[in-house]
Length: 454
Image 1 (cartoon, one colour):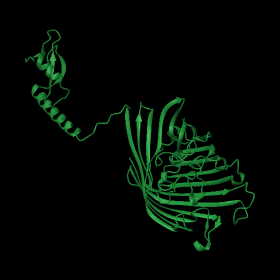
Image 2 (image 1 turned 120 degrees about the horizontal axis):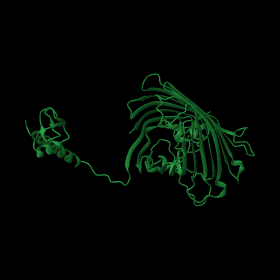
Image 3 (image 1 turned 45 degrees about the vertical axis):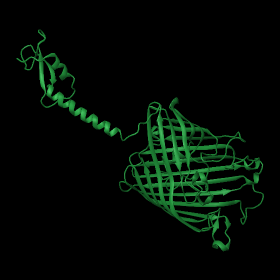
Image 4 (image 1 turned 90 degrees about the horizontal axis):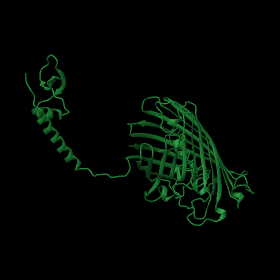
């Protein structure tokens, strides 16, 4: 019989590591003695290791801890009052070549160059498991940008999003407060048109300089977001000028009320915006719109009454997706009304259909067709060089192939054809027979694009 001292027992019990040379100890409940072998009336106490093994384990632990401390010297401590910080980024880079049917605003009939179409870097500071504050910074440098906020000149950094999200402030409903999502653009980009890197959705686009251009993706305001299995919605109130507008509210009290109401046929509305398109099946039908008072057209100074206008728009949209393909379509009506100059009232009617096929794993063939008609129904005289008041009829075709390199990187080769069918004839000294509905008319583009997300 071999007795084990109390100090030895304490030492072995301090270790949580079990080695190959462990021993099982037994105790006699009557006498309290401890034995190394089993016997009549003895109860097993568990596996223990000897002091030599403990000493070896301590030396290994000390060595590992020393290595850990050396490694930590390479890093900088991050302090925050938030529970968790989540960093991410989205980047779209590409090479674009354009050929125009008429000279553009810079007097050129073609352009080729590299673009930084989007460069988002964002952080979410989680206050608990659900509530967070998000900041997204955006820098853009594109060939045809006409605003310093969107790429004309140096690629200045602007704030795309800066909002507080509070979950379940109402049943099934959270709210964004700040520079928040407007109800539509983000929905379509994450449920129907997944290729913002090559083109905006039709409601944000201005193809041929005549397109819809009804709204953009973010603005100062509040946005209530509801999600249930068969219904989701976003209802918000915003300034109405967009996150990169140079206007302010000092001379205006008009705001923009905006909404999206969506039915989810497959009952997966709680996953809206987070679908895995190559795995999930969903069918969504949406009705959306906005009513914006006293739009100011990006004026930088006080705006007189003749420059302000009210914008009212509504649209319907449907999308069906399954792992092999996606198909979506929409119809939009937008009206701009000037109280003081009704002759300038404008109406835009547009429709769009897009789809994609995934014949092989990681490969996608995509296409989209847009049509926009711009008219001035209250004009007292015919539009220039036209017998009708329909002065803008533009179509756009987008087509391409996408390859998913890995979960972070995607490559896209695409083309775009813009056809401005009606409009003011361009002078023969430019391109005889060409037509234009703005500074750029018919256009053919070719694009190579790299998407990066992390």
